[in-house]
Image (tube, rainbow, N blue to C red; front, top):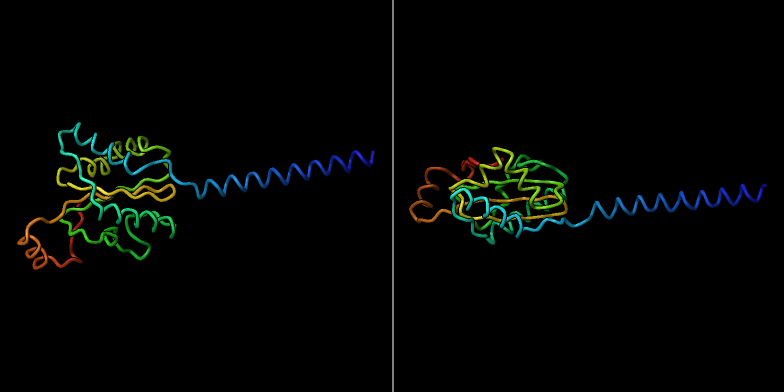
Length: 180
């Protein structure tokens, strides 16, 4: 009888150890898993929506792509969820080498597919407004773990616009009318 109890306890402890390790391993692998969403899918779906609504497609901007990726990584690394950094800085502080006239941002988290993220954005009036904003000409998408960042923009195009905007509104006073 004593042998049966010892064997049963040994089997129980072995199963408990394996189960605990299995749960821990599954949690660890999911916590650091790469997203199954791809930037190219988000861009394709965005442009499909724009075309279906009579708007021109957005062009991929390497500067916005890089800025969106840095933004996504910052959200993950510093574990916050906001259009502003924990220090209160707006999202556009991540935008480098892109002299924007208009700029917007959409964020998404924990979506398994680009289609599901796009559906959620389209069902939100403020996110839909970014996707279908006729002022935007460019797009950049960054993905880090389960976080998706999409930046939409339009660059300043004329020398006189650049000069006038810097004279009338210092960069710190630039307004972002379409960030949600």
